[in-house]
Image 1: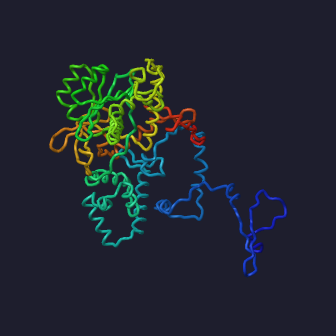
Image 2: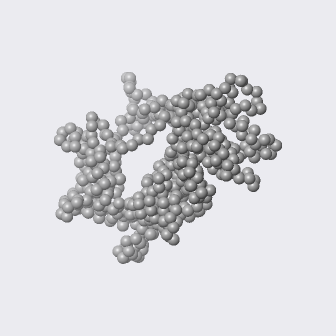
Image 3: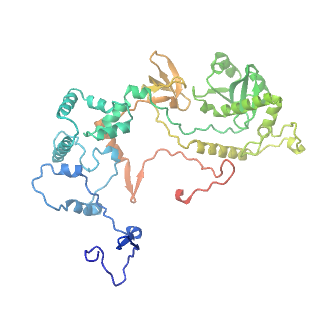
Length: 510
């Protein structure tokens, strides 16, 4: 190996020594096993990216003389980092999606009508690239002529071929890139896939949106929520206080008796059931002078407080019935149970005392004692932020919808297909819109049950957005500062659900 200049004998000290193992193989010769991991860590890498075959080929278009070494690109890499300091120019960052081809600074088409040298060169490069694709296209001459004739007569023909299997945007793009290329091909494919009626009809459901929690009331029984539930043949009305989580159960016609005991709330939240949207209930809210707000239709999460308490109470009453327990005594025990992270029961928050039940109790707890409102609101806020933090994992906000925009909507939760409709207006409730179906009827729906047909801008619109994007970024003290209108912030919880402290890893601190 030394005679063949593979290895070299070194007599003095060297800065690098590799770990080696010498093994004798069966034929009697020696095998040297080298471990170059330590050496690889300090090797000076070549930072110039080697050009691909396509990049080299289109540059050869129109060339007459060739050399074995071309140092122009190497000199460009050396000069470019010093351009900003040497010349009095201002550099702007532009997102890559606004550049028509990746390796350009001035290749975007000109807005004037004159043909420049750069445009002429661009056309030559496109022709060379298309010629390269034709040389390596795995298709018969008859098939190529058929495609050329069909695309000249119908511009959608080739796109429909790409979308033959009705796959998604990314898969269709990747499939097309194996065979074809033209400027703006990705945008054309995206337009075609997202406007496909069959794909939009069978599109998957929208992802969950970030949680919008209700405002915490300033005092007990200021804001309540109500809902109906059934146990067997018996129907019940449940009313829960947003501040104290105190629960009342009665028949629907006994709602007045609940208000007579605790007072009339300022706000009552309910779903869109016929009992709550009837003229009788509307007249009742006007006579008793409280505001009635309904949640988003077919979106029970917007009234999650009462939905959660309905599940708890209904499950407790079913078990109490099977265990032959008194349902009202079960309800009394629930009202005296402390709320997690607040350490006060609903009865203490509403009535400032613990209600006497069948368990032994200290006499001092039966004496009314007002709790600190600021401490209670702080505990409720931390509890709310913790729920919001864990719920928002994996959520994504959906874009708002414009007036008269074409949409696909699910009229019922059990529907498997989306139906084409048109947006009429936006309702007062968050993320709630009114749409008109093909029969001319109007219905409200939550944003999560609506899929939007996206408006993909044409070339002129994209050029205008490009200039706007360039103006919205400025250089200040060598740092890029973006114009941001709104950042939604909230405190990360410091404790887990079991009360253990949450420590942020050092790699996530910033």
